[in-house]
Image (cartoon, rainbow, N blue to C red; front, side, top):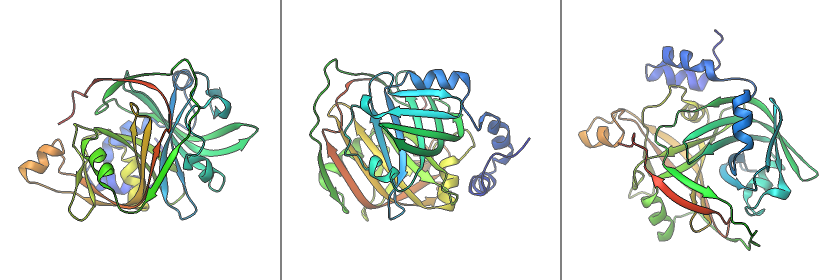
Length: 305
């Protein structure tokens, strides 16, 4: 069968000895949505989206809207209705897509751990954001913490409060140190952009003395879409979402790999892979009153090391 992976993905797969597995699992990567994916995506209240700013920095964002704010008119298109989006319109997502149409999307149902990724280019016109799909695939449910979310009956008028910086403040460090999940934006040298989920136990992210974030990489499906993109382009963006408080923390920066970490402690932290990656923060955006949503934590993933 045709190899659906780009050069960065194939390089990581070869480096880690998973090329054959990747080819087998790659059968699920398609140029358009399946019927099952189309039905699933239209049921979602949230969408994770990744974009690029004018400095080629990557940012991950979350869109939250009424049921029906996401429509899938064909297997090749996804349409976001801006009139039905409840999260703040001040998110950097809207500014970025005016300059760079390439985005990566992740549609995740946190209560069931199901998720689909779809990547392509967007156009924005008459209150609609239309994504022309270039690639889509489902992901396994491992390492996703389950949560119940629903929208309040009454729409809130949001007055977003935005703070920006380059060095993490203590509040942001505490948030990251306690996090059990985040989303990551990456893209390859062909500008194909991707959004993915990363999860673990509370505190699975370390903040090193020099300010780098040290994050374990657990066993996956051998695609290495995120790592393959980073192999070609080290720029990345991280998104932390506090559903309970209605706030987000977005980071943009660069990633480097730290593989073959063989100490007992590192093997335990990484579920046996010995793989970590380091994130160097360049800029951050903290947004209060980003959204309003009903939220309840359910349980941790049984796969968390």
